[in-house]
Image 1 (cartoon, helix red, strand yellow):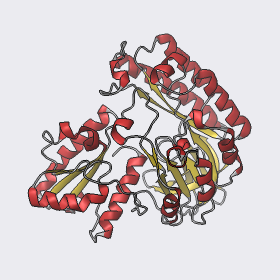
Image 2 (cartoon, one colour):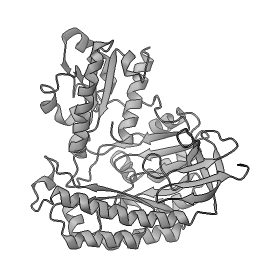
Image 3 (cartoon, one colour):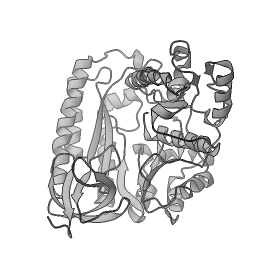
Length: 431
């Protein structure tokens, strides 16, 4: 459950399980041990995790013997969940995956077990991919040291910790032939500062893109204050780096950004966007924003709306501020009513919808290079992504073709669009 960084953790745990000789199944009805890897970033995520555990208890009437809850929820909230969530048999935190079988054996021998904090957090380069075979995520660091006032991540995952470069390269090589490798961390641009004493994202990008099994590299979660000229030049000149960047701005108005403990402000953000487009004219820029942060005024909300219209970003995600206990923002005065937050988010999405639609209209009649992700059986056509579309968070390209192979690239003539997706065909396709 949760983010792509959590997915990587799950894939490493699956590799540990597979190496032990166990069989892995996605069919809950036939497993003896069910593992639920949880998210707890927001209250809604915690609620979803707990409801999932409760829903899965019905399978204990069959062959299911143990429900294992791992990841962020027990790591941060084991005190609240162990006694209350009696439906779960075993709890492990984010650093305990390497001790999975020790914990499981103890659970079978002694009953319900809390194993949070008993592991050593060892790095594993082995993975069992849960994505389609042609793309994969590479988590280059864990934790965060930015201390944004709304965020629980440092309390859950700890300080920012870069993984050694040689281990990451070994992990990437072990993924097999990958059309698209997607780099993730809470902040990939800070990679290496803690481990090597200086930023090393440019260096690891250069090394990853020399691997023969890696066709392209996509960058997610780049903090604006760390996007220097050297990194921008590397993105521009390195042919294997997808001309796409995700920069979580979170807001545009200076007072709110200061309350959030975010780097820089509105003018700096607009200057960065301008620089990126001047240096890399075809770059796609994605971002996320939080609406309804404590004390956000109507004028500041309007300022964010105006920022979106001026910045004209390719894709955006908007979230209503979630008041999280144990964060500095929890104590701030001026909490915005939920109904107002939702209304503001809806307005922001509508503004961005029009911006995205106008950008997509520009592709109609053009040929776009598309990575085929497979077949959409409901629509009866192939589905893929252009360079300006990351998996799961952006739109897609639906296209007809005489034939198409997952993981291969195709020139697709765009015939139509909506505010999110493109629709087209390959040149050889005949109705």
